[in-house]
Image (cartoon, rainbow, N blue to C red):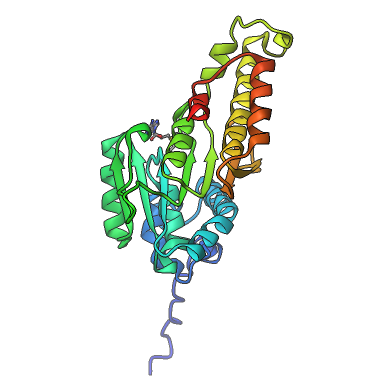
Length: 291
Ligand SMILES: C[S@@+](CC[C@H](N)C(=O)[O-])C[C@H]1O[C@@H](n2cnc3c(N)ncnc32)[C@H](O)[C@@H]1O
């Protein structure tokens, strides 16, 4: 026996950050999610967390928690529910909801709608690699996208999400939800220019509220979201508006959660009409009120 042999070298310890994330990712087998999380840049290429990816991970988990009650209700109520993610971009929301909730449920489908073909192609590849066979992608503007018809011949989605869909794309998402008779809707609106443009130079008793460009932008964004909430309420949705991330305060930090429980609501419709009369501008979304 060689008395001078060096002690065996201790095996390299996994980086603390690497073991952290598996505790943070609430799936049955976080290691299985690793390639997906790397592809979505929620983990670094080395499979670790840095300050940036940790922030991203915290945000997506927070959003998942906010959407979880609606998704669980949908999975409970429907045989093979469809969640349409509109203005999907890289589809990170759809991938995460599939990984954590829809995949493990063994039923349900996620359909991403996005105009940029390249992003759609990348998402298709990633879904195939991850084995997410109940994910589909449609390359189309939201306004023109129709999901396959159900047994009664109508295009249908059970839940619609639109996360930071630019400007009036959020309104297209509301029209899509109504057209597809979605019971659940979750919107995080993005930059909004339409109402600020309508307010520019618009007179009326409340004109001081939008006198300066920055106020016009902020008041316009606020008014847009108030109108969106009322439009949904008028169509029989219960609407809850809450903070999206809790990490920053911006006009892009509002989460509109809606669940339909009746076909229409006359009181919300009259509140909406009153507001429009008081302010005096009519965004294009009001076209859905004529239907
Ligand atoms: C700011 S990104 C957000 C992407 C993704 N939802 C997310 O939160 O990571 C907005 C995406 O919506 C897409 N988009 C904008 N308007 C659209 C429309 N009318 N129809 C479909 N996609 C649209 C853009 O191409 C872009 O990928």
